[in-house]
Image (cartoon, rainbow, N blue to C red; front, side, top):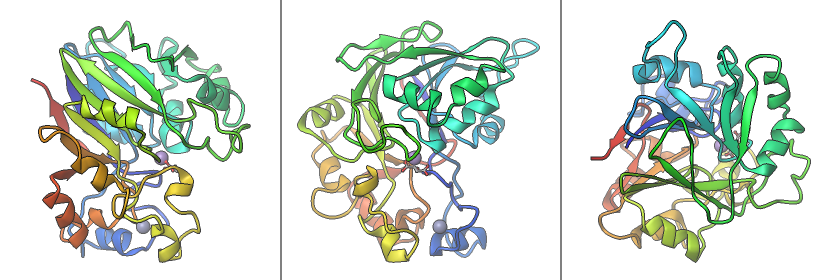
Length: 304
Ligand code: MLT
Ligand code: MN
Ligand code: ZN
């Protein structure tokens, strides 16, 4: 299996276009040791060139340009993106679908029933794409059955519903449904990756699944619960929008500490306000002491 981190940042990217927080101003002005990052997405290949795009970020065109293996040029019109899997219906994970509209055939796409509903109603991307390539939508099962995507044989996927919220434009925003947000266990040739860019709460069952993986790529959005209110950016806390902060009691670091020693621990979907983006920060040093990595755009994880 080859996994490419296409975008390691949360919605807004890093630096965010309108933000002058310490991190955004620092990376823009090169006064901070930090790397710019595009919005949340990974690409997974099994044995072949064709792979699965997990989430289609608004930065997808830039991500394809900087990762040549997504454009193998085997024919006049080509792409290595054989299918798309969505973990939620948020803007940062879905609006890149518009950029894939020039496909010659309908886009094979897997998502849960509530996500499909949001993309037909609240944010009707499927309806708009019907005027271009169209979407060949498949429902992701949430009953513990794993599934395979025919164009990418050998890669098995298992989705797990997470307790979270649907996006603001969802018709059921105030009435969460299982499947608004999922984690995915990706398995190929006996190797397993647990992927959950938005993870608000870790239950015993979820932790067991994480413990079975060779690597976990998990929610790195915020360092503290009150990160945005404290900066005066927004009044939303991390937990209120479905993101478990890294620091503090019951935080992500505590959970990751309990994983088997050999498990690779990586944070993904990092918000531009998070102090871990500053490579010289005390928070980044604390992660290093716990053996936790911060993903970067273009990073490749490969087994064997
Ligand atoms: C989130 O996961 O909370 C999103 O990044 C929010 C957004 O895209 O605006
Ligand atoms: Mn997001
Ligand atoms: Zn910022």
